[in-house]
Length: 91
Image (cartoon, rainbow, N blue to C red):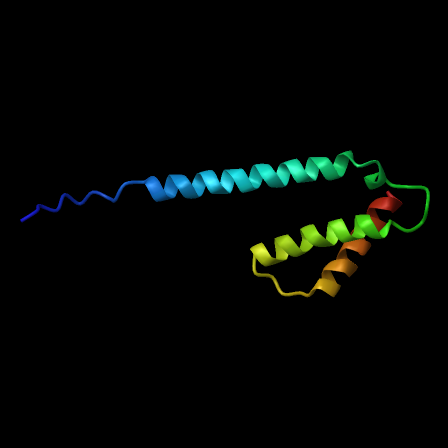
C-alpha cells in the first residue's frame, strides 16, 4: 500500500508547454521583425498598399483571430488589414 503525500505530479508537462509557448512567441517575433525589415513594408508614395502587404497583414490578423477564437472570416481579415494599412499610411 502506498501512502499519499499530497504532492502534485511532476511539472514536466508544464515545462514543456512553457517551452513550446516560448518557441512560438520567439518565432512570431522573428517573423514580425522580418516583415518590418521588408522595404515594401514601409509606407510607399502610392495611395494603396500592395496586395502582398495586405495579404501578409491579413494572415497575422487571422492567426490572432483563430488563437483567441474570435469571430470573423478571411474576407473580414482582408478588409481589416487594408483598413489598418491605409490608416498607417495617413500618419
